[in-house]
Image 1: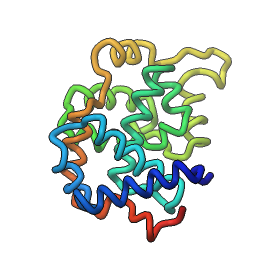
Image 2 (image 1 turned 90 degrees about the vertical axis):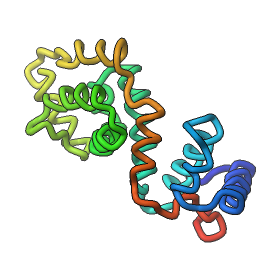
Image 3 (image 1 turned 180 degrees about the vertical axis):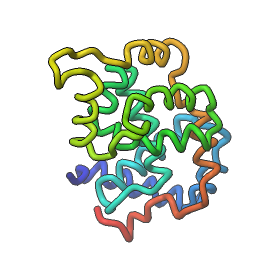
Length: 189
């Protein structure tokens, strides 16, 4: 789905401004900010939205940003069962890598406990296959549904709420530098 023309114009203008004043690389964008402030979040969300609409695939930094929002939204709203049932669960490997690179040891430990319900602690990245895995885990195949995540969901919402801004910023900063800010004059749109 294409963006409406006024929104598309705003995105293009913003990307041109950032490329001209800050640079186009991931590290240049991160160096421009000391932490994850509203301006940086705005830019990051626009970049992921643009690349999701107009590019063939997301870059690793994009996947980290999408994984950040996916787990925060789904796990807080409906628990880890909902997280894995939704497309946010497709990015589970990126979330784990972000927690490791962002040095969030508590979040990583908790998330590994969440993953442990899956065979070899490895959910499928294919949503249909992961749904079948979930059905085997939660008892819905036998009619005895019981989310195995109740305790872990409670811990997540009351104690962890990972990843936090510092984890994401640290993980993004640890990645190899890439041309990150879309060039709106070369990309679709």
